[in-house]
Figure 1: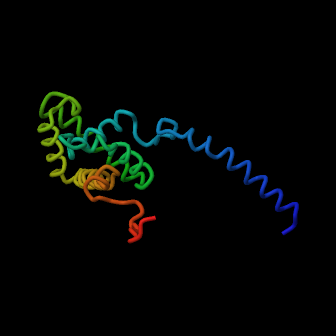
Figure 2: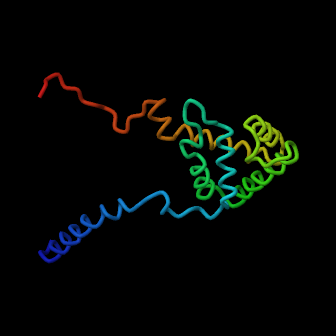
Figure 3: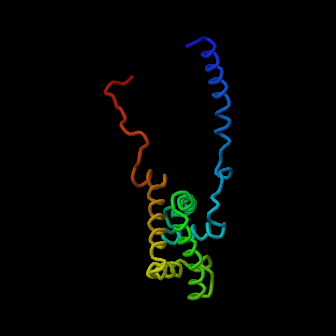
Length: 168
């Protein structure tokens, strides 16, 4: 390697290592680009549905570990437009069915009322795929969250500790 190329690469590395930490610490959840697939109202309904499947209690529920945000990103990035439209139709139907059965919005309904609405939608053949997918992805998002992995599965990022027999 020529000396000039070496000095150039060392200089670029030095500049990058001095700038990179400031750039990384500037990241936050609020600065990340939100998905444009769902409206704010639909995102709120996703969180409400996730909270209905896994409610808060003595332990954190789906909303406590951020499953609503997970579902938003998952459906925006990993599902086709046709599948996203099926989820959107389900979100519209949730409010219509709640108003029809309980004369109030899905968000204003109690936990048992929301469960009843979701059970009725899961039994409906037109919304069965969307309801099942939403339930399955909520469970997957919850069980793979850091809170559940650490507290219930006792997950360790880098297992294989070495405990030597000699004190140093």
